[in-house]
Image (cartoon, rainbow, N blue to C red; front, side, top):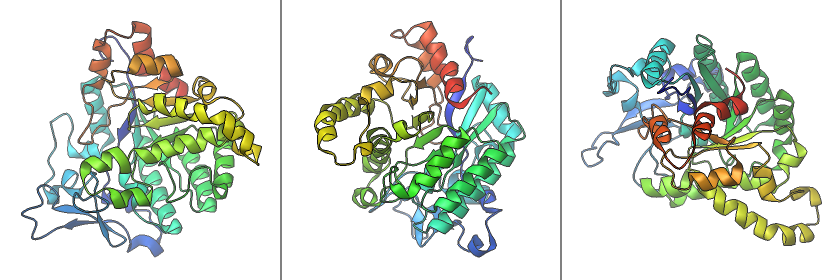
Amino acid sequence: MLQGYRLFDADAHAMMSPRMWASLPQEFSARRPRPTRVHDAGDMNRWTNGWLVEGQIIPHALGPGSQPGNEPARVLEEFGAEAHSPEFPLSSFDLSDPGARLRGMDFMGVDHQMLYPTTLYARMTNDPAFEAALMRSYNRYIGGQCAQAPKRLKWAGLLPLRDAREGCAALAEMTELGASAAVVYGTAGDRLLCHPSFTPVWDELHRSGLPLCVHMGMSYPPFAEVCTGLLAAHGIGMSLPAQMAFVAIVGHGMLDRYPNLKVGFLEFGAEWMLYMVARLDHYLPIDRSQMPIKTEVPQRAIEDYVKSGRIFIAGEADDKLLPQEIELLGEDQILYSSDLPHGEGRHNAAKEIIARTDINERQKQKILYDNAVKFFGAP
């Protein structure tokens, strides 16, 4: 609790570490991501290390595919990693010591925290079988660690889509392990989330009752090619795929086919929602009249869906358009997030929300706690 407010952090992270590959099947073990140093790196600033996986080093800051991320030097002592403060030791970063993460949460006044993997999973491999193995290995690791404090440590299981059988198996496994949500990135490679090949997975997700979280990440390969710097990565490669997910889910009738599905959009701002809803609703009447397959078009206006209580979004604590976002979605759909322990972690996000004068006390309590309970379920 912070200044009398309960806090449910809707988007925090477990930093990537080799512990997450412990349960990889034998046939994939040798292909696991490996922490790697770059020699002759005097002119590379901090980007002297990364994860070697599928012939590429990620993250990196120069050339196509540039993006920030969870490099080994932030999590491994042998690569020079140091805890940022006594309240957040390295063992809390990858959740190898859940008790350390709880102490950090206590320091911040956070009651419950929802954990997601690194965004690097969005582009580790194009091999559907290896991707599924990596994702399920992560799920088993994070599920076991969070089970040590299940009331406070919540987690979203990675959902492999490119292999439908593995996706359904992953859902069954994460449900058994106690996941509170499933997480995907904005696309599955070059396919939108509404692609027919994913239907068996969405059917199973709907039956499971788990909410779906769409997290930022460089999942769409053509965007990676044009991102030759970190700013382009943030503005294009990591953010636009999640907006593509909104079009796929809301604009292609998925909310009609799955009437109980709840969807959250995380870590790429919220202002885009104001534009996207108006843009899609502008074209919807003519597109509805011209589409030969009517089930590919939503039955209602886009604004009706975002006001339905099934769309949730985590914007920034200092977002100037927060009152307008509340007006569009409703005050029950906005989430608070810290992004800890990522480098751009919003350490003071809760304090910033509490200090705002353009939203009322009821809205603050909903954003800081109640809306996360509505989305993920009671802790």
